[in-house]
Length: 522
Image 1 (cartoon, helix red, strand yellow):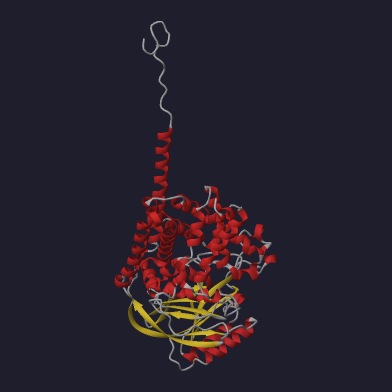
Image 2: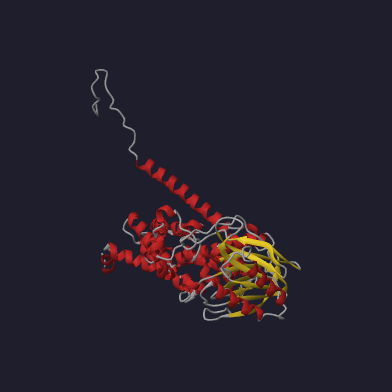
């Protein structure tokens, strides 16, 4: 055994190395935004798991790598959830344990070309299966999906219009597998090079032939970002002041951030009247976000509410997907202690039941989402399919103001816009606010976390339907079929091996008429 093998033979060292390798892709997301690193970021993790001495150790390598990945992409939760962040990372990291086993099964030892070719399909499919499971809202949602780090790469955004962020994740894992093979399995470099060529061809084909959004004019949308202002009354006053400055700017919509209004507008007609007065002054509807106990039904809701010159219009969207521990505590009777450890929700918010497309008149329709709902590709896809011309995300990340979270959140608007072929406005209370066009391109400058301002953006509108809106999460379905085929092939192979190794049927000895065994040669 060489020196490295001896060093890795100590379990805790191997576990630490796996966690560090799993954390490496964090650098592809904002703030570092080293997008190019995503094409090799998984290679150390893959090389480690393939050398696992046993299948059980490969499971551990997958688990520890998943722990490192989840802890790294959610590290900004540490000041708020404290030790609970490690618990969440450990639980979700377990989803990668089977992936570690797959790496060893397909790439361990000296794999032939057939196994390497299979790995180029099965390992990306396994990764997508993990991202699918952890994308469930109850497990925290799809924050930090591997493909999301490509939000500023034009060819990647074109691929997103074909298969969403899922297709980006699949191709990135395939490229990492191919690079790992080129590094460690020189004898099987032909399928590895072929895999790289296929990935490059897919990107080129999407760039050349994927339908582009057809721009048909533009609208002027203002984002009101008050900055860090403590207290709902002072925040409302600052938003009011900034909105007044927008008078006479010929706008089509004014958007306030998440929790921009801390009182139910039905119970506070004075506040509703003040927003309506702003709408009259600017001659523009105002989309606010109410975080308050409702007067017409029990419970606290986070709701996008449209206010026009005549007051509340009746257009309302209640947030459907809530942040675990941030807006509700799962199984509160068992996990309610989390409220004493970090800043978990003291009272659960209530869920909305359906998405809403709001008609502003003049042929302009908007599809609102609230906070981390913009991380869910299916929600923006549904709104685009229902006829939304502009996607709106109202957010508040002041709790994580000095972390990478605001920039990571804002970057998601580029992916959702590219996937749907619809522009997206990401409006926050304290930054970063951002607008991206129907191809995912940045429109204007982001409003930073140190700004208290109102920004006006010329937002291009587009028609047409992207392949992703039309066909949905087809890369996920394809990945599940690949995994099912792998399971069937593995099962058939196990049956064949058992039949080959089974002892042949015992032949009883030949007996003579005297009932004595026959003697050879007689």
